[in-house]
Amino acid sequence: MIIGIPKEIKEQEHRVALLPSGTYQLAKRHQVLVETGAGVDIGMSDQDYQNAGAEIVQRHEDIFARADLVAKVKEPLPSEFPLLREGQVLFTYLHLAANRELTQALLDSKVTGIAYESVEVNRRLPLLEPMSEIAGRMSVIVGGYYLAKHCGGKGVLLGGVPGVLPGKVVILGGGTAGVNAARMAVGLGADVTILEVDLERMRFLDITMTASTLYSSEANLLDLLSQTDLLIGAVLVPGAKAPKLITRAMLKLMKPGSVFVDIAIDQGGCAETSRATTHTHPVFEKEGVVHYCVANMPGAYARTATQALTNATFPYLETMADLGLDEALKRRPALLTGINVWNGHLTNKEVASAHDLPWQPFQPASPV
Ligand SMILES: NC(=O)c1ccc[n+]([C@@H]2O[C@H](COP(=O)([O-])OP(=O)(O)OC[C@H]3O[C@@H](n4cnc5c(N)ncnc54)[C@H](O)[C@@H]3O)[C@@H](O)[C@H]2O)c1
Image 1 (tube, protein in one colour):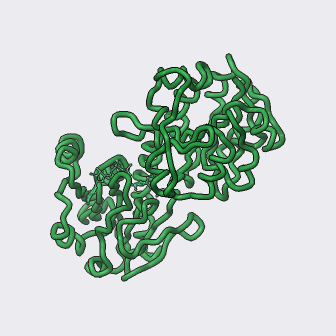
Image 2 (cartoon, rainbow, N blue to C red):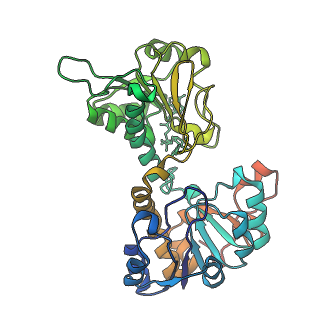
Image 3 (spheres, rainbow, N blue to C red):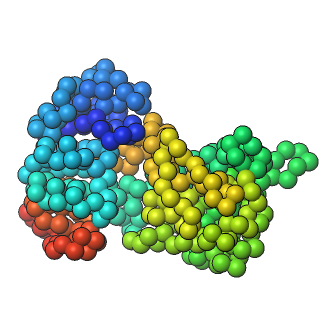
């Protein structure tokens, strides 16, 4: 099989879909095309890929023209739409429910679009989890930074020092992002409370972490906010917008210079005052509280993010390369949930209902 790895063209996207280590594995049995400079932003040179067995391709278009399977990180942009073609497999983050134009372009191209974010195993999304892990860990780093006086914060050091109490971190949601935030905050020596609604999850957190857990209710939150230095939003209700747990009035209870990191901003954010920001202008202030609402947090640590992402995606990529899609679906049935578009049809119910379009299940050549 010919596997193509284009350089990402989305602004501020530095990740790449395959590392030289993965290239080495695939190139034993397949032809791997890597666009020149694809890994340069994360310290992987063309020479590294070449040494691993890749052919370096100069033109972006040629990757799409030659590859049977294109692996990317972000969704194709309009300039890439005409490059996609029938029978080709595209393996990447797609987020089609939020993008009608892209959905139509993929349908028109008849490409088979497998979305990282919808590959599902036992009700978990293993190709999204690494990004939540990074965002969760990062939320405490950035939150602690913006608590500094010169960043608009109240001047509290999260870990405290001998004789001074540590800062108070409150985390909304104890899922993947929340637990990773908690690990970092506990590691710094902060006083950490996780608010959850899932009792089983709280039992797990209670056994595995030194953070406190508290049932997530408005009353409990109201009690905590006046003492909170760093508030982290990490809630998710699958398939829905993030619940608005924090109103403007509730924010007023926090002391000026407190910091709110809304990781859930990619699902609309969990505060009334949240709006998406970028790495270039990450923060704004509302009701005296510094808001950090960057929608693609892992982009900041692109090297770690690429390593974490490819650890999760590579086994699927390798199986598709070795067996072809139909056989790969038998070996890794989770791939089936990832197929969003196929041969001009929408195969994902949620995407179809988001755009009010018809859908039909994917029909493999032989039963999965
Ligand atoms: N900004 C970014 O760059 C970035 C990166 C990765 C993930 N995210 C987002 O972070 C959010 C969390 O992702 P995740 O992978 O940790 O999800 P997850 O499903 O693992 O965890 C979400 C948790 O929220 C809990 N929850 C739901 N409603 C709640 C409520 N009312 N109060 C308290 N807890 C509640 C759930 O029980 C669950 O444990 C998602 O919106 C995800 O898209 C953002």
